[in-house]
Length: 241
Image (cartoon, rainbow, N blue to C red; front, side, top):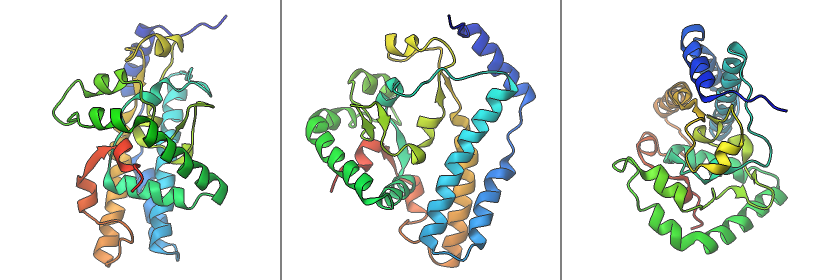
């Protein structure tokens, strides 16, 4: 029988983290410095920096878990968190879409077909829930979650993300450490933990890299800096044009 952490135990371990763990920001900046020096196209520099920075966020969470002896109870096929609204800026959306264009043809076509079907099925309700102002409405997450509309990139037949390696920060920083049933039984369980504060290191490094490219005179497919300041629901960014 599994012995899951209690809510209080999770809270205590999170408090310990703030005492024992210090994020090494330099590791994030080393990624973009490495790609700045590589003799590849600007597009490749951006895509590889983005992918590696996202992976660094996941690695950092793993290090934190080891520090305070926590193990996530999230498992393959558990996708309750994939019904939350995901907010990203236009730069991230453009890089995600460009990365998906680089997927193998079969995988790319599967996603394209899936998205067409998704927006045909959920288009009307998406119009309503993405009309909620996420900057002004403090209850927007709950309102979105109540709609039971899945993420555009969730394959609901397998409950797997179709672009897992480039999933945004909110997706990879939302973790459960107690009984997985809390996610099934509650729209917004209090027991879950968010490491979304790592967005600061990830975006700080990515933004500095884009600023460097901007000063060099070429930011490829990104309209820098305007794209950084335009945010929206992922469901809006991925809508077929």
